[in-house]
Image (tube, rainbow, N blue to C red; front, side, top):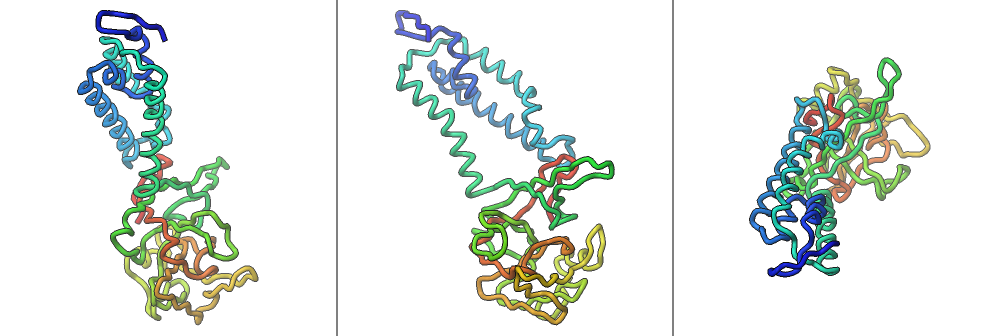
Length: 301
């Protein structure tokens, strides 16, 4: 880094300011001594990024967040203005340790924020299979044979820290400990049975304690075959599973910490009809929104 010595001390040439400005908008102003301005510009840029992401997530926009890379040109003029402003005052010499701290902050803060949000608040998932169709679409082909990618969903990981899972929730759960299915993976299904209940299927209806389930309304929609649904089907007997729900007379009683999950597309869903109940600790969170592709953005009901 080229240096220049003035009466105020040793500083970098002003073009060096563009380096920190590239990584974190407003950081060059902060390092050069204009700290309030640097913080304000960083917050402004961050709000612009959040605003763009919110715009892309909104169901009425023609793009989704997977287009974020292509739409970064929208943010470029703002970054250019902040970078130009950073040239007004040179940065004092930082030394090896100072640049090391700066680089650690540049990479550490975004990574920590992303990991924190993902671990405790909201996590995105891709859905490759059609087990939840038409609620959530998997990988498929259109009428022209073109490959279409499955929906990408957002999962609220915080909600079940303050409330209990409810019937009708679309949940994501971990497969560890569930026999005969892929381990170290996550599935998305609809929650149909709660602790202590006895579950059965009398096609096309789901039974809870020998009563047909009609609430919430999605259960009636599925059972009546509306909007692309096909009703609740029985499991097909297979040697790989105990298949507890293979006949209209079959019943499955859940324990005090057990839940039953079933896919909305029971014609093609590997779910609790085959592998039985899951534990409360297996539940990752509630799926609440489809954020991609653009033509599929909507709330998950």
